[in-house]
Image (tube, rainbow, N blue to C red; front, side, top):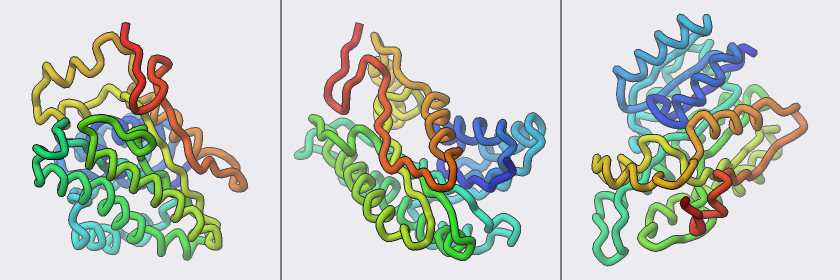
Length: 252
């Protein structure tokens, strides 16, 4: 297709799966993340396998300065961004509100909310100039239902849900699509990060559950991004069959 797709948090999980899916469709990619080595490995793999072009940017979306420096300094040919996938995000801890780590709260809000805002604002001038574009924001079922010990992670994803809706309204006049994707349980590094490297706790999250994979979510995102120009999926919740929402899961 030879579109330019910008994916944040592309070094693992859903972001990496998106990079692989869009590359297979012959789209060119800008992939960002904090782990430079992983980005470079992915770049080499996709360029060799799919014959596309990949541009890497290593920075933390929590930093407003880093985001705008990276996007403003893209080579001219890479600024014609057709699709921004705001995928970078994380959960940290499963603690009660009264005992939660304040640094975890800051990291979640700064990454899940501020990072998404910074990236969107940095990329929008290019889309507005082009008279079209598409922004896909990764939410969560945690942004639809609050669950015990989800507190600030849920709050950050509720904020993403509100941002999706307001962004969609404000950008109507620019012919820019905005889509919110809200996955349930996805077996990636997500739980390992949430439990701060405790692999046993992370693995227990998925026992008895045929959860979504990063590729499943990437397939859904790819579908939303490939619809005709006059069609926009505004909001989409995706779970495995054993999960109804952010609260109800049936494990076998």
